[in-house]
Length: 147
Image (cartoon, rainbow, N blue to C red; front, side):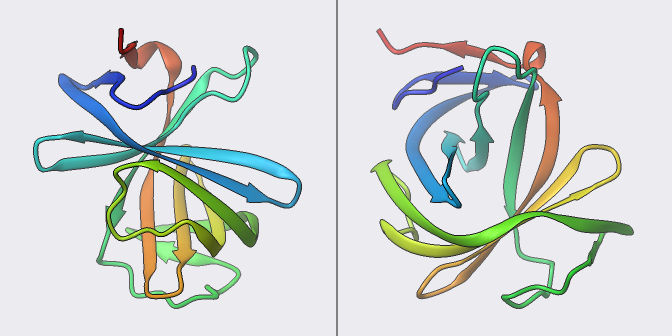
């Protein structure tokens, strides 16, 4: 699943427009997040990386987790314990509209809990962002490409 600007992502009865794309280069790997918007609702989608993947991350920004950066080795959120999956300094490229993010560097920590739940903590030069969400099967999402 390759997402491009203006592609429509259909998920749980909402049609999100892809407004921005972030490319993180971290530890020799590349991770992508798409900022998708439906009215006031904003989600962050990590698309499939290859044909063998069948899970897509659907994240949203949360403000009720009081955690600093760098975070502790285990993070507790909404009654669940999250363990580290990856971390490090990332170089970020941005395409499209992504308010409150600037191309350049940030530090990223990704955590996972039982039930395929994820937390991603990003420390940018001017703020810390926390994303929370889940991994969903690719068949739960439809992508309508921009012509």
